[in-house]
Length: 309
Ligand code: 13P
Image (cartoon, rainbow, N blue to C red; front, side):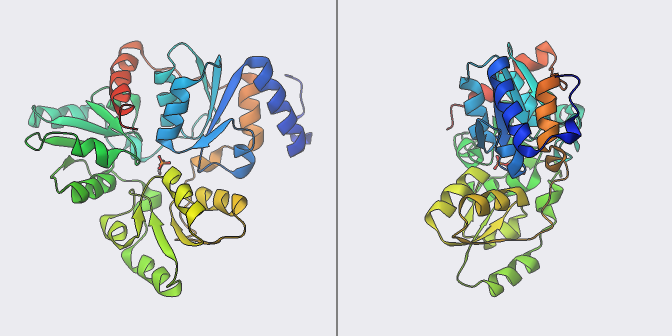
């Protein structure tokens, strides 16, 4: 395996090698909905963050390869402390996750010592470890509404999801000013223009978009929930990272789908390609580790999240 001339292989060769390696190593491959279609094809499961966490917490494979970004691989490792968890690319990181440090969060907790800390899943393990509970775009609203009205809530790190769930729950949240550059860049003006161009289409957006854009949408939801919506609707504007649009076009070619904006490309998600993912598995290259204490604390926060499915 080590002497393979990787560049001489076709995609079909790579699919065959991936299948053989999965069996040989007893490896389960998880891929996020934003991954390239060629990568999704080698995955045992493709989904959104909550769906991936649920599946990761149940697999009895010996090894897991996570095709996505580092925070997702960390979450997988925390939920599977005894398994070998590999990442598909060594520096597929998340700028949103790294905009604030655990020290920033500790400073906020000091200022609001009685507040519950809700941490969006696109965060490093160190931030999850400082939190009461983790949430994803699927269950953020439910988790916030489960916290008693008289409790203050610190919501980190994504200010846009925070603003959306604060609006939906009519709650005030204490937040950072961090954001996902892929979703934040979409303006209300661009969104209205798409509405005008496609008047009989539904608009669905991810809650990492700004509050103005979310308020304009017919549905604000996770990528997994977007797939469910498209299954039941024929004309839809897709307001999230372009990988989801590509996946939907592939599976539902008969539907009328348009991306909200072609510039919604996550450079980190796109670092993984088919050859890179198969090589990561063949050579077991990018193993994820999380320091023990941090892992234990972050697991409590993630286990609480898994009660909200
Ligand atoms: P989902 O959990 O909705 O798939 O979102 C993940 C993400 O990274 C959004 O940018």
